[in-house]
Amino acid sequence: MKKVFLFGIAATLVAAATVSFAQGGGGQGGGRGGFGQRGGMGGGQQLNRKDVQADLKLTADQIKQIEAINTAAREEMQAMFQGGGGGGDREAMMAQMQAFQKKQQEKIDKVLTPEQSKRLKQISWQLTGNRAVMNDVDLQKALAITDPQKASIKSLQEKQQAANQAIMEKM
Image (cartoon, rainbow, N blue to C red):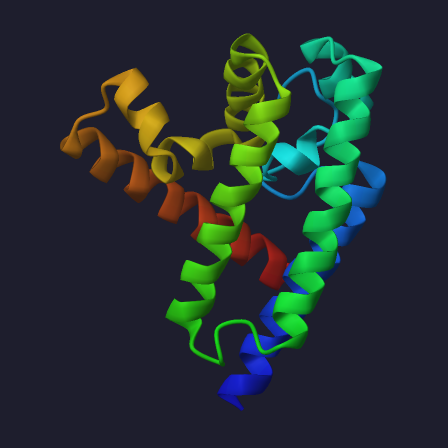
C-alpha cells in the first residue's frame, strides 16, 4: 500500500511537471501578481511561460537552451520514477527530488544572466504566494523574518488551510 501511495505521488509529480513543461502553466498555491496563473513551480517550468520570458527579456537562444534543459529534465524524471524513485522510501524520494531540482537550477543559471536569475527567483516567490515565506530560506533571510514571526505565519497558514478544507467539505 505504501509503495502504491509513493508511486502515485511520483506519477503525479511527473504528470504535473510534464504538463507544466509542455504548457508553461502554473501550479497551485496562493500566489497573485502580474503573471496570470498561480503557482509553486520551479524556475525551469516558469521559464516556459511567455509572460515570464518577456519579463526576463530572454533571447531566442536562451529559450532554445532552456527548452532543451526542460526536455532532458522531463525524460530524466520519467526514467527516475519508472525505476522506483527512492526505492519506495519517502525520505529518499524527497532527497532525490531535491538533488534533481538543484541540478536543474544550476543548468538554468548557466543560461541566464545574474540579473535574469535574480528576477526569476522574485517571480517564483510571487507565484508561490504566501507559502514562499515559509518554504524559502533565502526569502526568510531577505525579509529578516524572526522565529516568532515564522510561528505566527505558520499558525495563520494552518488556519487558512483548515478554513479552505471546511469550505471544500461543504461543497
